[in-house]
Amino acid sequence: MRRRTFLVSVPVAVAFSGAVWHEAAASISSVSAGSSPYGPLGAPDANGMALPAGFTGRVVARSGRLVGGTLWHPAPDGGACFADGAGWIYVSNSEVLLIGGASAIRFRADGSVERAYRILSGTNINCAGGATPWQTWLSCEEIFRGRVYETYPLGGTTARARPAMGRFKHEAAACDPDHRVIYLTEDESDGCFYRFTPTTWGDLSSGRLDVLCGLGGDAVEWRQVPDPSPGVLERQTRHQVAAARHFNGGEGCHYAAGVCYFTAKGDRRVWAYDTARQTVTAIYDGTGTLDGVDNITGRPSGDLYVAEDGGNMEINIITPDGVVAPIMRLDGHASSEITGPAFSPDGTRLYFSSQRGTSGESAGTGGITYEVTGPFRR
Image (cartoon, rainbow, N blue to C red; front, top):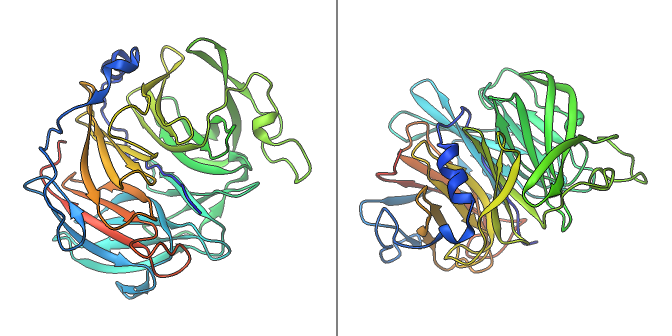
């Protein structure tokens, strides 16, 4: 199985400059390969990671091996970080059948592992998802009629299915606290981009599901999906509204300051939905160093970080001034993909996984989860 996303939303709104990014989005040619703000990649370290000077990396977990007293799950995928006292928690999905679900690792203030534990079990192909402002993790099933599950990394509540958010081949989710909605991507060759509006912000048990529709050119609008939870033989959500705009293989999703960025691996593009102007434009069209666009996250600096599914196994930065450049490469992982990029709350550590590692095994012990520490722009 190849692909996956992710996408990761951070648990609080990020202070991006939506206006700056809208200007960049106005012309695809404004985003092109250039020099990374961190400098060139060095030689691979002992773990096969090529990093810029001043950055260091380590392995924090391997599939099928104990970490913090818990066996780390196979096929690690979408992830996010949550503040927890003086420490933090990294959550990761498991993209396998039947046992799927998600696990969490709690780190102490010094970066050491305190413990690990399961937060969701018994679900299928949990690919990506997104963090909420109320500190929960939305774990999305990438299967036919898949569900979104709301999980609780900080504990105290059992994970719950949220069927009102639609039954389709879910990928990623990104919370927009400004408009009190959640954006959702769909991993189909003719997938759609959705918006879920909860009846009550913070309670995902009910609400309205809309699909993005084209009005010609970059202009778009939202229309309600008549039946968000169709039966097996009923019309799928992406085919219920004739004017729905389709994207080839929706992947990662990230919201910041009025703009929702999402990737489509078939289109090889990073898209930007401008909530004020009601437009969708491509800020990256696949003609730079970034290939196999997948999971996406961002920083208050205005930088986006996009992981590759395949390609040459890099995480690339897209800067507000239109530079695309690699900031990390994994050597020896040709049959894998990079998943789950997420920053620690202080922005000094970046977590991600190689879903199938050097072995290429997705359902076994191939997955490896990493941490990179360094002077990331904040």
